[in-house]
Length: 92
Image 1 (tube, rainbow, N blue to C red):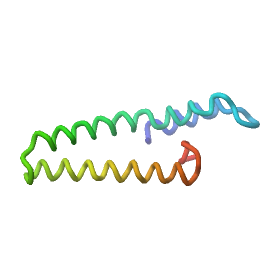
Image 2 (image 1 turned 60 degrees about the vertical axis):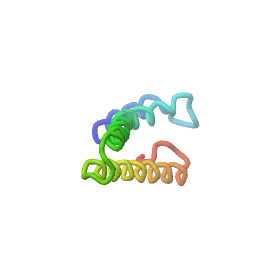
Image 3 (image 1 turned 135 degrees about the vertical axis):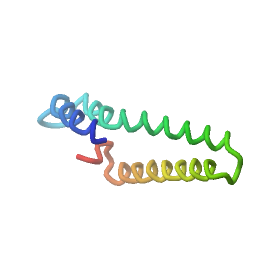
Image 4 (image 1 turned 120 degrees about the vertical axis):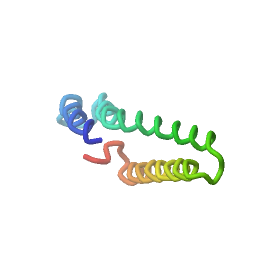
């Protein structure tokens, strides 16, 4: 998010109109969430692979299961913020 936030601010500056809704208001949230979403999907896929490949109850299985729970909580928190504010640009 630290990397994509300045880029999405520039995108919002160049794509949002001065007055009223515009046709390109979806571009800035797409830029903001693109890199975190990519890393999130990678983390979830690696976590699922670690849970499946490790024996139940081992340290690696426990760490992978905990990381999947944390990822799920982050998605739930972001979804709650979006639903509360009604916009995908929850940071601005």
